[in-house]
Length: 103
Image 1: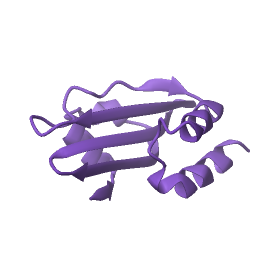
Image 2: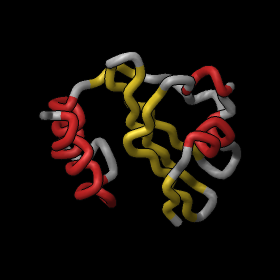
Image 3: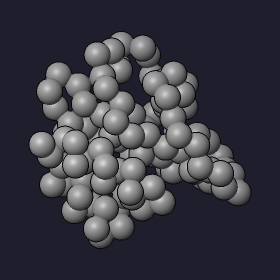
């Protein structure tokens, strides 16, 4: 089951404080859970920079401890989409976000 995440969901699932996403603009975030396994992807802007966070887990735990934002770029996100590194379930939505950022 795939779920689109809001800021509060991200804070809860990754177990991060509110300050971590303070002044952040969440551009795209989802959490796909099936058979006790899950993977999450978050794309956000903060202080004029683009960041990505990936998380995954098996049945023994959740996303806690995996909040490690990595600086990114529109080109990098497009590349990772093209090689399948970012789940493409919602590729059209991500492409729309990237088109707006590219202007």
